[in-house]
Image (cartoon, rainbow over all chains, first blue to last red; front, side):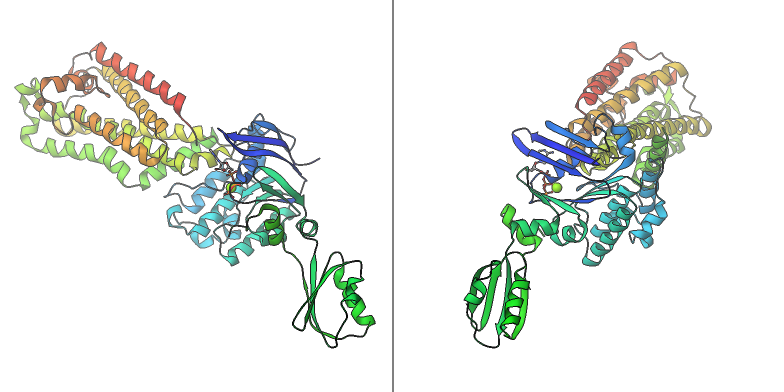
Length: 302
Length: 244
Ligand SMILES: Nc1ncnc2c1ncn2[C@@H]1O[C@H](COP(=O)(O)OP(=O)(O)OP(=O)(O)O)[C@@H](O)[C@H]1O
Ligand SMILES: [Mg+2]
């Protein structure tokens, strides 16, 4: 049974349709990514799942419960990191975590969480005096302090430096290994590729793609390019005759063979058979970044 | 209930940590009492104060400082700030409710007012022979109703204001009006009579406090107005208040 089920979710703010029609399911133990340009409706979608906003249409079920009706039960089991949320200026790191831990029946150890998020030397620092990335890490810690079964993390690593981002990824993988189901809203394609089992791309309030990151790239942009410099002249037809190949181009001494499927294998087999030696052989595949642009017409925000 | 206790503990700590809050709500009125009490003339009964000494006449106005600071300045500013910064919303994602934080702030306000009242009455009595409130029941009633009216107004400001800035913009003039009509800026015997009459009906109702303190029963109309303000402002605030 899926842990999260969103069916035909619809949400308006006045006249503005923030979420037109969004459906997806998240399976137990999965890291599920939600991607999309600014204003696409990602936050609205996950906050409906968290029970913080009331949908105008469609259904949401989390752990078999209704986020509005069974709010009390769900709050014990769902940890949420909000995209925009601060703490009182004078509240210290350890006070915040101990306070939040006290709300839960079976909380994680605040001291341990502080260390795991690299805030060990900041435990007595007031919120106001933390750097942006440290505030973000505290926010992640607060989402995890209740030992949730489901964690909904809106813009997990926005504002973190590259090292902290990688540390946070490692933490999220650990958390997943302990069986937590994770929904991750992100603008970082590298993050989605590295962490997510599946991603939904949302654009203008609709799901425009839903697949594994690799599956998404190969469906949206199946073409790959093989580039090389042959040692002897080669005839284009050698390649155009291959079923995988769609085009052959030349730039100077370079040959670029474009194709789908296992085009690299097809090209290298031909080269081996005809005993042509090549230099600078490179395979160019599309990335999730390219697929994102193709799907939404936007560059992923950085 | 457990969450409420924890939140109250933390909010109390934050209140004390923010030096300005205990200073202006409790230390300032107490310091003024000591200053006026130490001036010998402040302790002499005077005909213009109805045979009361100046400090006795002025003590209810000192209590108004605490009430105004706590209920119409600090309370709405803190709540609007917490809402604007998403503190209330984040709490709504946990098993604790943002209502627990609101309740903790109210309890903190009440506690501050109680501590200040006890200190002013106690120190006045011990150090300067200001009699204890002669009508304890009437005094308690006047204090409770006056506090309720001001807290309701403070909550109304927090409910109407969308941001911390606009809460300040509303709270400051209200705070100054409460202080002015409470006789804090200019002792009331120096004010024209019509301003003094307005002051009788301006929360928290300084005349009712003075009457009960010095032996006359507080005027039912003075108390009634406080009750009406408390209920009307409180109900409107409850209707308009948003957690986000
Ligand atoms: N509380 C609100 N009131 C009115 N409009 C809102 C509200 N929250 C979001 N919107 C609007 O709804 C649309 C979707 O917003 P949402 O926050 O869900 O986008 P998002 O995909 O999370 O964007 P981002 O990547 O910038 O965080 C936007 O056009 C936004 O302006
Ligand atoms: Mg968002």
